[in-house]
Length: 301
Image (cartoon, rainbow, N blue to C red; front, side):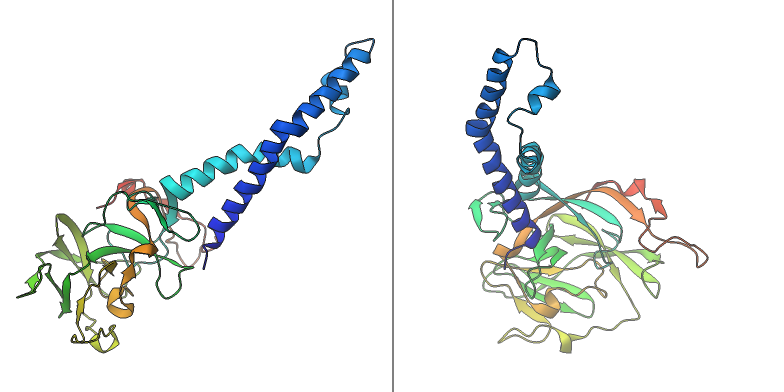
């Protein structure tokens, strides 16, 4: 299924582009020729307003011709270079918060055509620890953002809130990822005090949240054939994604793997961040920001 907005953008670029080309080749020269002929017949110099009434330009053509350069720039930037996204949930806390607006580098994992996401030019490879945006495998109309935990061929275990990884084949033993306790912290979007840890995922050091009041639910995990309930083996051409807010993230543990074709790009920066906290007496609608978190602007780890 095509990405609706991307499809609309492609159609708008194509239609306005065709009109722009025809105007350059046919309609524009005809217009100028008619105006020049009228000027040559006139006994006085005609001003621009009078000339505009001679062989007038259709308003649809005029608007399409004017909009084409703007739509083309937006199309190129959004489809192949950078695309803005808004963080809608707390599944990537504390790395990303609700109200963060991020930039996603579209060419990180290859230049793709914008509608069906087929790779046109292979570029960089997915790295363990990347924060990636992808089409949700169960509904590709929805964009998800998670951290890349498992690469093709990796063996993964998540048990008792500890992540284990074996990246070799055959897998003789799993290695627990290094976790260093930082402290406890209160978050507005969570119902209890959260434990904050530093975790080393490949070469990437980042923070994760653990909710000590919630128990693991392996019975709800995605069950891969010939593995136990808390173990996964990443197939070729797929990736295993997890949220940094480990106990409040619906991720690969629950629905399985992300095909490479579903990857949209790598999240590289927060360009603005709004907070929406307000008292019960506030008369502002819930979608109106209550402040700007300038300290969050910058790169994403």
